[in-house]
Amino acid sequence: MRAGLRWSQAAPDQQEPGGPACYRGPVAVIEVEGLRKEYRRLRGGRTVAVDGLDLSVPEGGVYGFLGPNGAGKTTTIRCLLGLVHPTAGRATLMGARGRAGLRSVMTRVGSIVEAPAFTPRMSGRRNLELLGAIDGIGRRRVRDVLERVGLGDRADDPVRAYSLGMKQRLGIAAALLKDPAVLILDEPANGLDPAGIKEVRELLRRLGAEGRTVFVSSHILSEVQQMAERVAIIARGRRVADGRVSDVLASRTSSGVLVRVPDVEQAGRSLDRAGIGWTREGERLRVAIDPQDGADVTRILASDGVYLSELRPVEADLETVFLELTADGGRL
Amino acid sequence: MRLLGVELRRFVSRRLVQWLLVISLAGIALGCLIAGINSRPASMDAFHLTTLSTIFEGVSLLVATLGWVIGASLIGAEWHSGTVSTLLTWEPRRVRVLLAKVVAAVVGVVVVTFALQAVLGLGLALVAVLRGSTQGVDAGWLLSTAGTAFRSAILAGIGSAIALAIASVARNTAAALGTVFVWLAVIEGLIRALRPGWAPWLIGENGIVFLTGSGSIDRTMAASGLLLSAYAAGFLALACAIFARRDVT
Image (cartoon, rainbow over all chains, first blue to last red):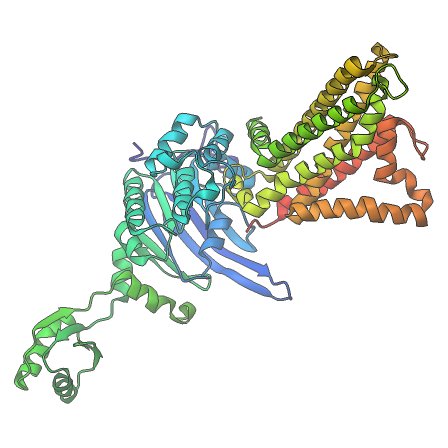
């Protein structure tokens, strides 16, 4: 439905003479430049939540926004949505800056910020109907999105009776209500059970495949790795890596091979004699050698009568890379 | 207009409004019952419908309190539940959001409080017809009494706007109600005692003049109404300025 979608609505100051601006070439739906946000502490001093962040999210697909707790993910999202004022720099969403500009694009942006908040005594349906009415969205659409997120049966219960996972689903339903071109989701899988997490992953992947831009912050790295084409990793308010998932993984993959042997101690002594570094990982050895030179390890160990049963290159996953990059708050 | 429509629907959907309505109606029914029981037809103790205007003046404090509570809770509850943040992701123009809430609160409070007084008036009219006296009731009386009820409702509406503005700044319903109570019961009392010359500028004095047409200060009903409206506008301007600049976290 949204495949090949191109947005043409932009802030008035960015429109070309003679008509609405159409962005050509690689479209950055979200652009963050030198974004800095400081919060004043109650007892004096300032906390820097975001510190000169740069980010460019292209149109279409799922973009993972990763970082440890307190890295500045939610603050960045709040800046994008106009909920907080940047101390410096700028955050642009679909070309719009400022609240007046935001209004012109907000009809095409669905979002969840932290835990989705709804009027607790009203039903989920009533909450969505009132939100949808702001943009003239009717009851049929409300019913459809409630069904889509699996809340059809509980839509008329008060939100205060919902579990955390159900509130999260309602938040996703609210984000989908506008049939958005851009989805900005802050930890959308929070509180969901494994089946719910899988459903959300598949839903987001599908939305990305439809041509929508799905900007999703998450701490469930395996989930992000399975659904995102591109990621940005931030730590202490700064970007420490970004790009295609495969590129980010490749850039930080530790060289080496994993070797399984019957006698780890003896294998270690053999490698020591050959001057090759190694570390023990359970019943295996992580050997610091280029995977292409794996045959050398085989030969060295075999010459000492140690016969390996497994040898494979170390494959970094997003979690490994994330932990490496965000160690010590991202001071690399 | 859509936003105003949504806020009016939200106003009607609020459980607090519904409960206050039910409690008020129950209170009105009880009051009419007591008036009916105490009234002795064709005697000195007969209930006279012409006292209705005085009754409206008497309940005006309750009516105003109703307006304050509803106005303060309309946004205080939203700050408490975090729905302000959700709402701003749909309509980022904050001043519009706040003004829509204020208009919804004022319109809702004026309509509800006037309707409640009308119900009270009808109930007491029934008591007067069945067990009391309607002597002296004419078109002029009806207009004057309706005017008192309407001004009482307007006073509640102005109170709701001020309470909403304070609750928006404080991000809390209780803080707004506490501030209004402390101001009216303590600060204005101290001002009356220590600076009697400032009385013409107090909310209490002007509220009485606006409602009854007379009081301890030399000011017309219209002037008092305008002054109270100006106070409300001042509070709202401050609330809008703060809301527009505030980080919603």
